[in-house]
Image (cartoon, rainbow, N blue to C red):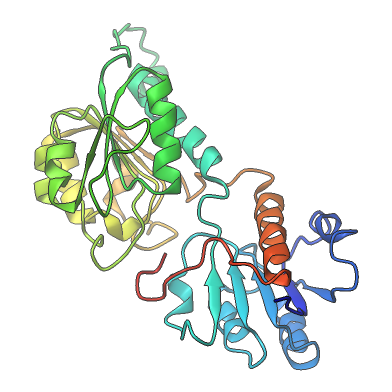
Length: 322
């Protein structure tokens, strides 16, 4: 079975993406919309059956819902992993795919770099520099230390592979406990605290679902060893912020690297800004310079499958959110 398509690409910076389609989809009408006004015009006149919606400011993420609900649309490709802004949809009427895993290698690079920087004490030395202090502190090598990945999805597996290359003992959690290549120990949801126990590094990469909201709570922090290096590059609500602050105040956390928050941007009065052992980054873990091109290329690969009547990759279950 083959399918026809009228393709809408919602992208503010479309010039670098147009060549990805050139010569690959001859005869397929493809229209770019660079603003909300252009999107609305395309929905009325072009009536797309397929759409790729980037998260680059062409329109507010909530506006993607209008694209999804347009009467002729059969498939929306979300230009990021999270689909919370799309609410619920009927999977019998609409297909939604996401970009989960497309930039996993880059998010893994950020994650391991952040853990390494924390481990060798770069934040400590930056604070010393501000005070004009010269004091050497020894750091512990990575070899054979325990690294816990909470959420062994596409990103979590990429992070685990990088940690394994450093010679670490890698453990992780996923929806069901089963052996996985490159992971020394895999735990199911009931084994979270067992996975956290003794882990020098904890890296959170679980998708946000009703089951994972508040997953890292007081009990989870209590299961971690004192001085743990903790990173969250998943979604803010996966970590209970009040519990995180209590863990920081108690000295449980040696260093926290936080890329995501309950509300973004992080509120100016949040106490998280003021901890010397907290590194805050503004949701940029996979914000590489080529992110739009990589997502567009993955969409183009999927579009070929669509046109050939084949199954798409990265179909999102509206009940699970991934």
